[in-house]
Amino acid sequence: MPTIVNGALHFEADCAPRRVLELFSVKWMSLVIHALFHWPGGRCRTGVLQRSLPGISKKMLVQTLREMEERGLVERTVFNTVPPKVEYALTPLGRKLAEPIEMIYAWGEANHTVLDEMKAYVPTVTSQT
Image 1 (spheres, rainbow, N blue to C red):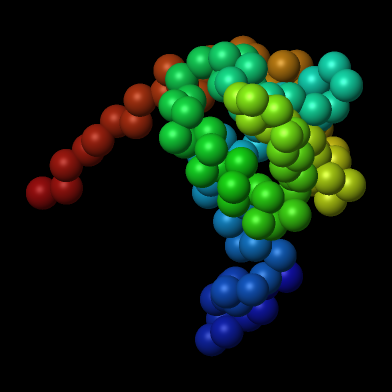
Image 2 (tube, rainbow, N blue to C red):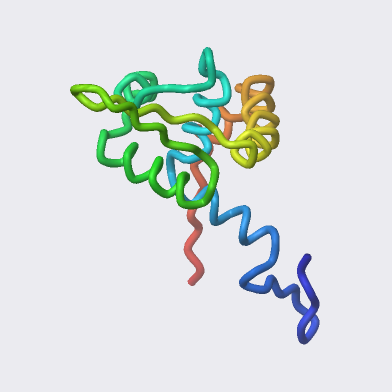
């Protein structure tokens, strides 16, 4: 939690809010977790996953999956076939992280009009002279 330093809130570099925010700094991570969480059978090939996420390039998906694997959120299984077959699945840690992500996404579904209002919001700029 934040501490108060000289009368102001101070968030340490390793505090929980900053560490959670770091997870969401990888643009596609939460959506990949969401997709794998709901995937029938819980395992998915890279190309199939990419086609289910319009707008993500293969390069970005592979980078995201690699980072998720390094963090212990997904497991990568390589099958000894020609051509090689690779599947990804959430680890128990990845499924644990999916819980709050699912709550946020459910909130978004239930409050789509609020999201529309945020998108439509254009701040007025006032000049100070």
